[in-house]
Length: 512
Image (cartoon, rainbow, N blue to C red; front, side, top):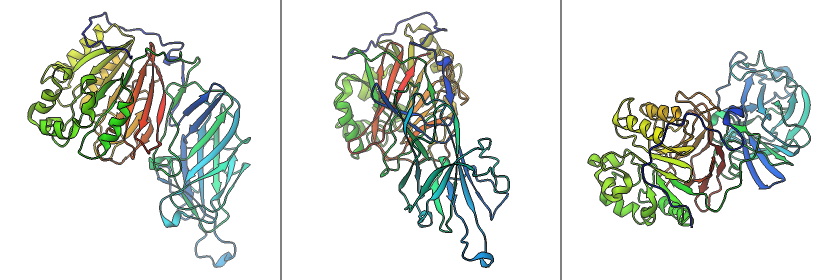
């Protein structure tokens, strides 16, 4: 049996100082803009996947144009057969930068993975020649053809034929070492140029996949990226802790859930099947639980046959669709006292050493509002070392359909002021994880909050737009649930995909 949640309210003194298990987050080193993905199948091996901290390309036909914000990376070389008869001697070179400072242990294998762009012109009989460049001092925002760094250094290898919308790999084993920034240049000897997706594309960013002999320790880590046949996008900023967290115990409580759930399609059934396999877990919802308007009819027709099986152990939050029924009456009627005071929509409870707060992004969240005032009082009274909050509309998101809701910032600020650790939201129908941030979106590994968008409960998918700063893991084609194993001073998080899908993202967050 799992640990039964304590849903009672327990006053406590304010907690202004907390020490993480083994190491404070302030003691870690950030690798901004990098994906660090760690799998630990045993204590003696780990797989780390990095995405570039920077990438760009240059074009000789537009010698003063910068392509640092482009979603493409290209290589091409004019044909020498035409000589002076060639109408335009176009040359394109690409540049990648990876930060290996968070990679621990001897590297046993390394692969550069590139995704060929999804159009006919991206394919090529010659995918390019790659070099470990001596010059690392270039910026993607400043590089042009006229001032490009020299593609000179140790040869890494050459790609042969590449085909649109596929992953290609180049073996770099024995050619890269941990603990430093590396710069890779790509050029071509063919007029049949190749085009790849850049990190700015959001999906299918370049990857450097590294196997090490010793398991890495990360806060937070990420999980394996999707295989070559998928279009899941995963990028991660990571930090490296000095000591491993303690192993989970059989009594560690589990919190699992998602937002944007039951729209009458098959997605909610797929995610419900995942939760069914976690019979002792407490279930959360991050709003938009029953489409289209959160009415009792919607709950009875769409939610009840799927996630309704876990109603007795569910602690919900409402979304904007719930409020398409006046006062979210269907939501409060369906969940009753489990949704907190009727019409209020915010409440808290405890799980193990974690204080859990369900908030309402559909009512007043201003500083000094009833909700924000209650939240500050609730956090000050908590006796728990770690805090997780969830609500519907995210403060930070790269989703194309719904912009960041800045009105939620006072809630985030109150949580940040109280040293909270995790925020979970929905609203955009996709998965996204952000590196620890302050309420203004600044990277903050000392006391920043890790925010998730988990609008993956079953509703139809949305796409990504402009990728926001500190976004480190993303996927827009996989239903699934977000699972937290809540330990005494940390939490293991894992995105669990629906049957038939392979995207996942997992790691450990150490409490402040």
